Image (cartoon, helix red, strand yellow):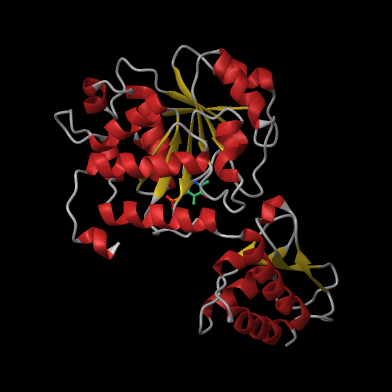
Length: 339
Ligand SMILES: *Cc1c(COP(=O)(O)O)cnc(C)c1O
């Protein structure tokens, strides 16, 4: 990233070379580096509405004369779907929070629909299989855009959504891939990724469009490509073995506290690798899980743990734990929970 900062290059050539690396890693036709998965959401929506048309790109977020409805399962609404709206789209939810049927998706698609969005995330609810939803959208000529921001690891998820029918997929560069915090990936069909890039750069238009706020630096592009190459070259079995033994250390340290069930959770796709999980059981009469989280957060060093999941639980997400930190976490938890 430091070297990139002192080099000068045509941004189109750099993005296009980076895009090839991203596309190859994801089994897609094309790719680009964005300013985060949220920015990918914005650009995917813009691409589906304005395409490559400079006058439409200029006009967004005013969608006059464009198809501008994004259909999205109600149970997948989340705090990042506002990025479709920032581009100018209107979200049309289908189904109800807990359930959705194929006919409800079909009904939600109209002549104004520009895309079907799908949110893939840990502990997310899927009303029908993704591939089936994609088929319904495609039968109506509607592109499918996926927000898979936090879906890696495992590395297999890089190719999964494209192979199951997605037209474009966004990933966060700063989460499991371990790239610069302010980066994301957007991969998919060439025509659509090119449109996303035009919305981003807007070099042909007269105004900087909505995609310009998703700007990416040459340093970030080089940083993300490097991180992705390291990520795909990594033996994740070895990494997970390290997470497993760090999680086991925490589990061993918290052994035998009444009212708590502390276990190593391993092999659950929602957990994306081995985790130490503390379940707060009926017999527990100490501080609540929320109070424990707050105490950890307010301590020195501050410790941020996961909560929620299947039950009343605290989970230690090992991707965030640097070697040796599991000892600090285990000691602190032991102190709070056995007091
Ligand atoms: C984290 C996340 C995002 C945002 O990712 P950034 O790379 O931080 O912009 C978007 N969507 C989902 C589902 C996420 O989990």
